[in-house]
Amino acid sequence: MKTFTLATSLVLLAAGAADALTVRGSVAGGTLPPDLRVAGVVVTPFGQVVQEVSSVPVEKGQFSLELPVTAPTARAQVTLTPQNVNWPGVIDPVQVSGPAQVAELKLFTYRDQNNNGRRDENEPLREVMADVRGANLFVVWVNTDVNVTASKGFEAGLKRGWNAFLVDVGRAVNVQPFADTTVVTVRLGR
Image (tube, rainbow, N blue to C red):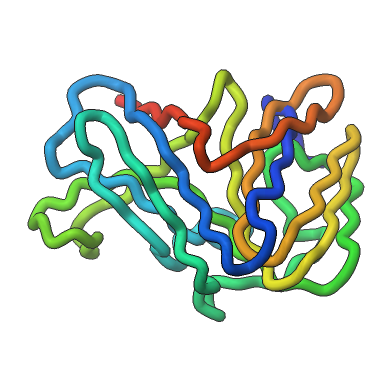
């Protein structure tokens, strides 16, 4: 059984596959290096890094990360099954309404030490959580419309393209819309 300390709020961001998703935010947590970037990175269901889809510099403690309307590479996609839904707030049993390909996106920071505007192998990634008033941002891409349901009333009607959730697990699942005009906070650890 999967347990998390967050509850789920769902947002259907895109009316269709052509809509882009933008994550705007501020970075907190001490002195920010001038070469700091925020990256949207597709990961496997087990959290392994597969593909950076977008990155932007942090300027004056702020960032605006736009995810492309194009699909993640085939290598970054996996078949969506009840067994590989390891999303925040999802507790077994999990049901998936039909066949779909999925790509989970997480936010990372890194220092662009050579200022080339992209991550190089010698520039380590650091996973960061983006939150809004304690609810964590969760982003996923799907190749077709699909519904995912789980315990505690979790119900996600995903539309083709990028979808985003605010996840805040409590006694029940609370669904709140997230819009790309919402500002998230990314906290850097020590």
